[in-house]
Image 1: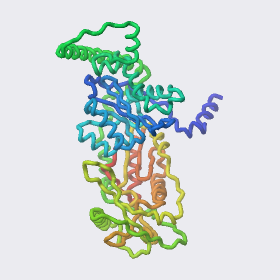
Image 2 (image 1 turned 90 degrees about the vertical axis):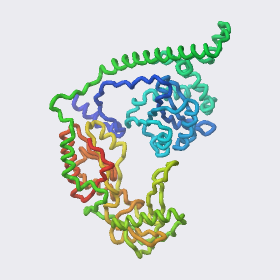
Image 3 (image 1 turned 120 degrees about the horizontal axis):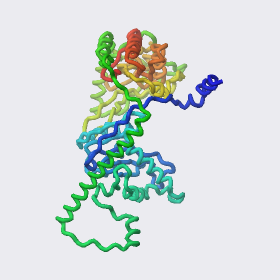
Image 4 (image 1 turned 45 degrees about the vertical axis):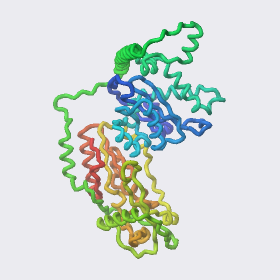
Length: 497
């Protein structure tokens, strides 16, 4: 009966669909170093989208918390694009100065080239946390929970004015002593308690006498001594709090120790990669396992006019066409089909020339192409399958789509026009309607039988194992399959182990 019950629970469709993984071992807690200077290291995060949306249109909150004083800042935002977030951060830094370190999760608004450019210009070191590990920014995450709880506690009539009331909520939070440091954020930042609502009530009850006047020098000396005392005491309190937290957390953890003779070096891995060195190339390969066709039925040829282009864009297109002719990716064409060319910026960096990506706008061709319904895997399910792995390696193919040839009919339909002439692709280009389906079908065939230790999402491959010896064997099998398929890998985008 017990075995039958266990099997029934493991086969629960609801639990399988939600992607829950088994319980994993916890490693001992490693507390973050205590920061003694205000706003030397800060954590940032985005809260939202909040429901209901504020009457002014704000749905998100940019949160910044100082690691030394636990002093929070929160800015309501309508959108969280990189320029909007950057302007909000500059507004905060104009009051407290630029930090030395910034810690954040891997949100697209924080990892953009626009944001990276700002950090570089301001001399700020930016650190990103591990995906699916919010504990790395626990200080910010805990404040997020408190802030959302305060907002949800507003009355129904004030619920859509949370952005207007945000300064009041921050005021209340900043004057409350923090358990870890023993002082309020206001005291640690300014060196004395601020006059808040509670202080006003207290003054009304006690009618405290006025403070006698004091000269500037005496005031500054007293303030400096008091602030230093607060910081010293807060650091001591925080270290003691971390010791207690670590003691309780480590009771259910397992310490991983290495013994003499354990294989922890990667020499055998380098030897394995050396055997497959021809695989790692900047030149796209060409597989013999499949070709890509474009099924347009009885549709007549689609011809779209060239877009109007600036002289700078024309020069860039000419350069890209020359490169593709050299690689053998395209050839001159007399096809009745024609699609326009566009150059799309890879990243928007205000202080540098943006890098452009050559693209063909196949909207006309795609509108008459029959759909290939071959599925692509769910990214979240692939991530769940990696959860128990101790060793993980990732590979990225070199211009993966270009490693699949086109049929004769598909070559004519892939034709595109530039100011320099008419060309067509010899290999599968980016932008075709069914290109992802064809590529995923190829990858599934190449890696068939290896799903126990390898997952693939289009041209990205991940090999995972529970031991180093197994990992080397798995890597060898995957690399052998890619070599037999005639594919090549971009070494600069690979991570081993």
